Image (cartoon, rainbow, N blue to C red):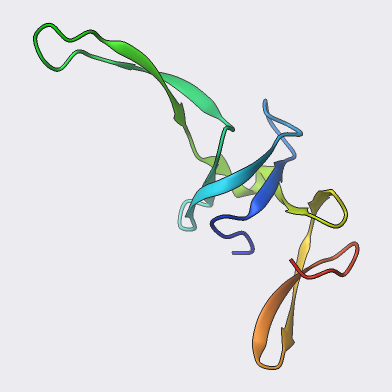
Length: 101
């Protein structure tokens, strides 16, 4: 998988198209990831104790990896990622500007 936790990504498809956010969690087996402030849904929570009120909470739901692109800080856009091995260390680079990410 080319995208990891704490990467900055750009949404390229769906209701949040064009938004940029930080990856919170990655689910490689499902092919999904959670992005901060993107794909928010409202969840209704029942009162658990007597006297407590129910509430509506906004929850981040996972989004498909095919709907996002890694955000390059040099190009300022969503880009594809390539890999190169330098001195025995595997590094990711932007396919447009050739800068390391």
